[in-house]
Each structure stands twice: as C-alpha cells, then as structure tokens.
Image (cartoon, rainbow, N blue to C red; front, top):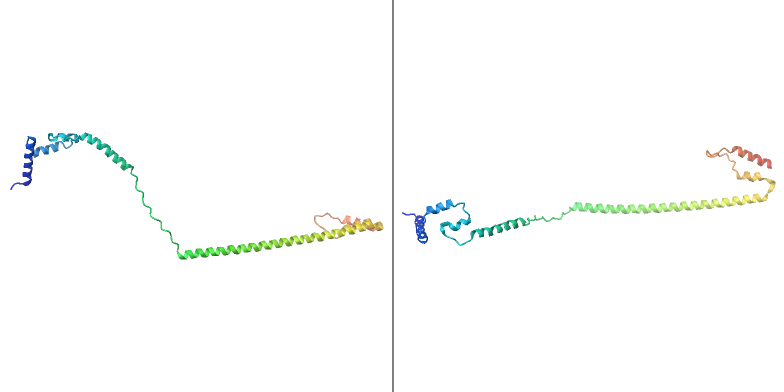
Length: 202
C-alpha cells in the first residue's frame, strides 16, 4: 500500500515541473534550504529562479526605523505609579477618650482655682499696701503736729527772755539720757559742761 504523503508530493512535483519546465525534487528543496540557511531577505527573490516582485531590501530598511521607534517609545513610557493604600482614620478607644476629657476638665478646674487664688492675693496685697500708706500718712501728720508744737514752744520761750537763761533753752534742746549708740561718739563730757553752764547762769 502506497503512502498518501508520498503520492501527494509526487503529484505536486509533477505540477511544478510542468509550470517551470524543469523537474524539481524534494532533495533539491532540502539542499537549497540547508545551503541557504544563512541567506538574508535579499536572496529570497532568486530562490527557484522566481522573482516575487517585492523590494525586500527597501522593506527591511523601512522596518528598521519602525523597530527603533517602537523601542524608543517603549523606553519613554512612564513607569506605573504604585497605588497608595487609603489611610483608615485611627479610632480612639473609649477609655482613652474619657480619660482625656477628665484630664481636660481637671486642668480647667485647677486653672480656675489658681486664678481665684491670684485674685485673692492681689486683693490682700492691695489692702496691705493701702494700710501701709494710711499708717505712714498718719505718722507724718503726728510728726508734723509735734514739730509745730515744739517750734511754737521754743519761739515762746525765746521771746520771753526771762532770767537771761540762754543755757537753759539750749539745755532743753539737748538730750541728757544715758542711752548710747555704737555709731555716736561719747558725749558725756559735753553734757556735763552744758549742765554746769546752765547751773552757773542761774
């Protein structure tokens, strides 16, 4: 029984032989394929002596810029931006929220108490200062009255001129107490002389 594939190839060879006018065998096709394995597109036109009518070198030159443009556009393509995961708002626990509210309330109460204490201290300080000014003014008035009275008595004694006791008037202006101060010189000798002059004038 004959092989169908072999019969088909034989019939095709006969048809090609009639068209070309020369017998073409399978071995020739195999040799051509093996020998022209490294041939470029420019040699395809001469295979089997048939010109395809296509300018393959020109087509090859047109395809080279196309491939270059494709590679260039591929290089210029922006890299994909990684997607950002949406941020989920952090939910504060109930205990922490209550603690925060209590702390805030406690601080507000402390601030209020501190402000009240400051107002009380300001009021007390103002009251003490007013009292000090009042006492000082009162003391000044008393001092003025005492000085004025002493001045009037001195003028009255001076104008009397009784007994020619000049040393008596001088002795009244001096203090004969025994108090001594560390910062004052010893005036005991001077006092004794004044007393002697007073007694002598009398």
